[in-house]
Image 1 (tube, helix red, strand yellow):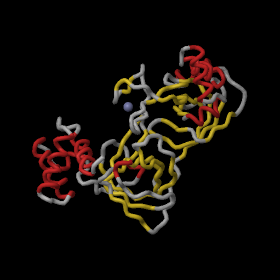
Image 2 (cartoon, protein in one colour; image 1 turned 180 degrees about the vertical axis):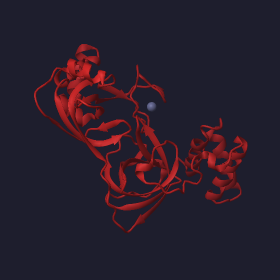
Image 3 (cartoon, protein in one colour; image 1 turned 120 degrees about the vertical axis):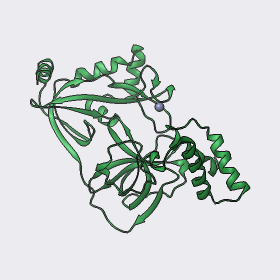
Image 4 (cartoon, helix red, strand yellow; image 1 turned 120 degrees about the horizontal axis):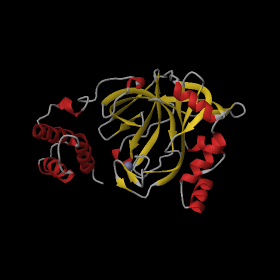
Length: 310
Ligand SMILES: [Zn+2]
């Protein structure tokens, strides 16, 4: 994909909420300035952005955070689609699940941690684990109460020669697992680039019908007698919790011609048991990184009735 095309897509994304404008139109405006008039790309980009600001009757600030120069702490990120600057250390790099993702992992600063995604097409420098960076013009995103930042082709990356004390925002909760919520068990996620939304009846709320990729998840409720906490087990945590692997879950679903059997089977083995789980909180959820089953099962139904009466 050409460089101008990338810029055009970035601009298109910035205006997607404000204008019904075609990426091709944006690209041809950019190309006119860059190829015909030999305007530097940055300047062309500003000029084209200004054109669409005028057309939409918007101030530059309306595109969310203006020039993205506001320095924020990671724990302050609590709204999607904000353009911000952060100073953070690369805590962990993960394996990208899609070709469109260049790098994905976890960033941390004193206030906590946040997931980041860097698009393959953004053509940015490789981030290295353990290194601290100033990252200018990143865009915040949110999914199921969980925030992330996206590095795009306008992002600036500056390596800092310093260490950061990365804050630990893990929470530990203990209690009886009194409910396994819908959307648990064998689920399908949207295969679109870094979307990962769970498909409902084969549809992604953002991208429509899709094949989907199988995944395991348990959304559960822990009750400690005083308080209930919603917790999420990802694939690894679900496999550990239920002793059922993704492959086994797929076979179970195929045999029964129904994915629901997986959640039923899983629930049977875990409901009513006491667990201690630890992990970061995102929105109202605790994401389980560590888990331990504590004692014998309690009467799940009784605990649930109690939980509801609180
Ligand atoms: Zn999607």
